[in-house]
Image 1 (cartoon, rainbow, N blue to C red):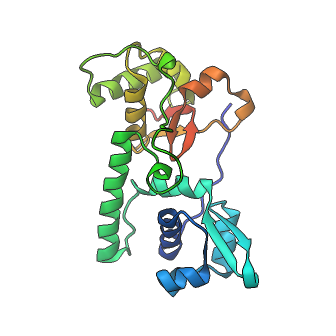
Image 2 (tube, rainbow, N blue to C red; image 1 turned 90 degrees about the horizontal axis):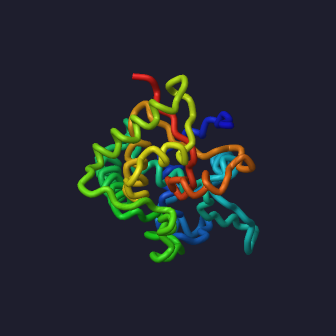
Length: 233
């Protein structure tokens, strides 16, 4: 059911800077515009340009005067969202350390409010939240903390996973959580996705997904994620 993912390319600091610029601008930018608004060091040419295009992180087209125009692609939005909780690069410097502190705070805000980066910087309206329809949500379980919900998720996983570390559909996990609200489960799953030994990913064989699988997905990095794996302790 679950295939293997190709490793994502490691990005340099200037490449990350460009992705975050395109995210914040939410518009096509040429190298001339990037140079004028920001710095020459984050313009995109040669192998770095092809690298980001091949990784589907950016979209690129030729415009007036054969200039290249760049925009953040869907995968680029996802990588930016994942980087909000990423480790600070060793060569980031004091400015980079401060930037990652701000990014981490933004990531926690998105987790708490169930918003996406596209709602903050992009064109996705606030009303288009990633919540499941009311009919798909179980009744409220009063008084459960995030730690308690995480414990219930792990218990459900252990009962279903044979062996430990195998992929289990989130639909099966949710079925075992009883009256825990789906929105609260979503928030805890997003937190767990950052934890060591926990992987929450997209089902690569989209044709195998049922409506039940799609309804049970959790949105992380603007992508529906359908399966969970937790390494054996």
